[in-house]
Structure formats: C-alpha cells, structure tokens
Image (cartoon, rainbow, N blue to C red; front, side):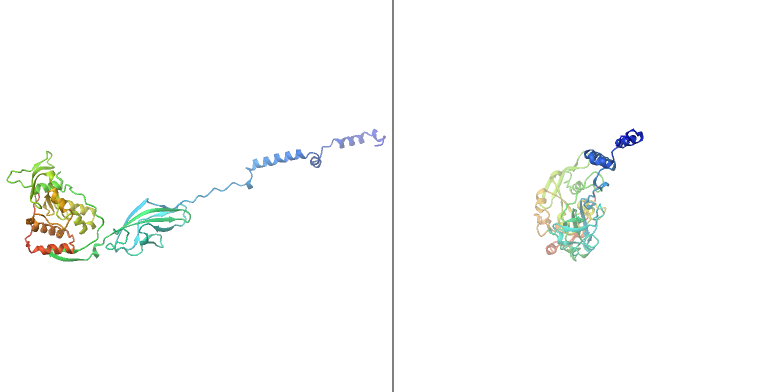
Length: 371
C-alpha cells in the first residue's frame, strides 16, 4: 500500500472490513472437517428421532398365524340303519381362517368308507346288518376322520353303528302246540342285559316280589307268606322249584328265572327293539303295555342250583332234571316266544316239534293278578 493511501480513512475501513468478514461454508469445510462431521451426525440423529427410526421409514406389518380346522365334537358315535343309504350324517367341521378343508379317513375300518364330493363320509358299499364288514364283525365301525387346511390337521374318533332293518329278515312260519311261531335267525347288537325288577303297578312291591307272592305255596296255612314291616318285601314262605322238585322257604334263597332267558330272547330278536321295550319285557315277560309280571308264564321261582345250571340255554341244550315238568316247560317256552314274536332257530323248532306229540295241545292256564 502506498504511504499516501494510509492517510485515506475510507480505504482503511474497507481493508479492515475484509479482514473481519466471517468465514464462508467452503472455508469451514476446508478448515474444520471434524466440526462438520459432528454437525452432520447430530442432524442425522435428530432426523431419525423425529421420523420414528430407520428401516425405510414405515411400520412393520403384523404377522399372520394359521389355525387348524376344528370339529364341533371331541368324538362321534353315529348310527345308520341298513337299506337307508350310505352317507353318514352328523359330523360338522370348519376352518377358523376360512381355508378350504380336505378330509381323509384312517383307522381300523377305514377301507369301508370314502369321502364324498360334498365333504362328507359314506360307506363304499351299502352296509348289510346280516353281513357286517367291520373288523370285529359286530356292526360297529371304528375310524379316524382327519381334516386338513393344507398346512395343519385335526383328527377325531368316529364310531358308526349299523342297525337292523327287520323288514328284510327272512323268516318262515310254523306251528307248535297249536300256536303260530316264526322260524329264522337274525343278527342283533352285542348283548346288553335290560334292567330288571321295576315296580310295574307302583305299589312299592317290585316285580320280583310280585312273582314271589304269586308263586308262594302256603300249604294249608302251614307256610304263611311273611312280608317285611313295610309290606314291600317278601321275607319267608314256601316255593317249589319245578326244575329240581325242591322246596325253598326263605325269599333270599329264591331266584326268579326267565324261562326264555334274557340272552336267548335278545338273540331271538329282542336286541333289535327299543330299550324301553327291552326293559318292559325283562320285567313283565311281555312287550305289550299293561301286563303284570305275575300273569306271565315266563317267570319261575327257582333255586340257585338249577338256575345256574340252565343259564341262557335253549331246550336243545338244557332241560329240567324233573322230567315230569318237561311238557309244561316246553309249552311255557313256546307261549312266551309266540306272544312276543321272538324267533326260533331251526334246531330249536325241530327239537320242540319232536317232543310236541308227547305233550298234546292242551293250553296252559291263565295266571291271575295278585290281589
């Protein structure tokens, strides 16, 4: 600068002003890189905090969980009568996610069934009660039904019982002791002994004790019938077991025999009837309503020895040791089966027919109701 210029105050001011001017951004980058780095870091951190974090700047979508199909019951016990079709109803299933469901069948008797195009199960061939195709040959088919949505499965146990259509059972008619009887064989469910000894007339005396009263033999007053203090139970008296021709004097030693045993009745057709009818028959000796047990020829007061020996045998397998009672016994047997339309198998019919000529056709007496 020339010396003359130093005395110019305006020029001095301009020079001073240039020296005090703040540094520009370009000079800051050049002269303070560390400071810039810190400033940028703070700026980025502040943006992340204000924008809710990184990762693209948007919230994550909720995870979808698949759920397995469900059945409306934990297990199923279903039935179908023969000659009524093949499709099994009564099973309901769904998928919580509305996914399509595929059914499959496994288990002991699975080969007898298929899945229909409407999502139900059906017998491959129509079931025949008289020719069961299940593994136990008892007309109870056991399978496992599996429902799948393609990823998850659920399964349920199913038992399907086939019941009899009596209209297709082949029987023929015959005559024994002047009574019409039916000869043939029928399949029945597994034996389930009906409950016995109700109080048919509601007088507090059970059907068992009504029979004890009716068949008590007083012997001209020597053996009076003794009842409990309540008047509801027989305690002592006298009863003759006609199978052995032996007397009993205490009611506790007397058993009531079904002449046509309950098991024999069951396999002769009783097993295919409704439970209420089975119970009525077991207590009164009749399928008809309003019959009192003491009026039935199907009950006898006997001892444990003969009753245990007889068991559920039919006449081809057992006859009373007291031969004098054979004709009466056979007539009671035929009367009971004829009245209740229980079947005779061929061997049973032939045996009784072979003995009928020795007994004549004289009917059994009617048995009166208790006073």
